[in-house]
Length: 268
Image 1 (cartoon, rainbow, N blue to C red):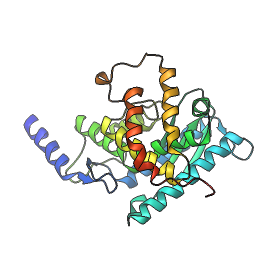
Image 2: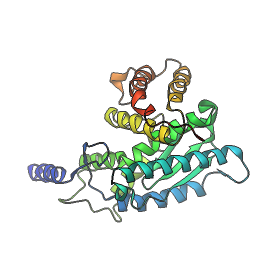
Image 3: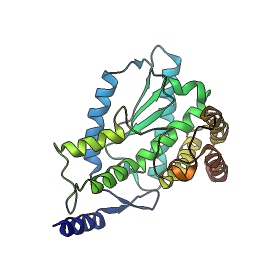
């Protein structure tokens, strides 16, 4: 029986791999984007109802978050359209909210549900650096990294069927979703994705930032500030899927020439 289950899981994995339209990398996708977006809307609404959302109409920081989000998503829509891939963003209904919290974090759920915590702003210090962070998080979403992580977790839990997974009302699937996307989940700027996913998010996040009219070079001093914050407490990189600040900074510098090809300052 065990061998049958293992073989079934292997077949499910093989038939459920798809090529990401932007990264070109094959990804495991046991759950449809439509299902993920539906779950994300529900979780996002619940999160906002349980936390203090800062009004963009009366707070300059919340207005900045909204402005950065709008410019980024406009650039992303243009980027996908220019490549004939507009359908890849089908179902995305972008929302941008600033939430009052000391956490130094930001995240983006499937379908474009974005949250920035007020605790992040003293670290970003300026609008362009904030765009770098939000662009990175949006890149995770459009590159479908969450779907990939969920699918990998589902395989590990023995969840899935040939041709897709049954998710409606599945408590295990909901639990996995919450572990990745929930308010207390390991999502966002400082928490781990795979190294490959982080590289993709860094690359496309810089491109989206530049296309939005923000200087992508702000990524380097941003991560230098992050490095000072970590104060040597981050474990060695080989013990973590998340890159150390030193390696991330070097990688961002290597990616910068390509990103700068897309950079046209706001107003020019």
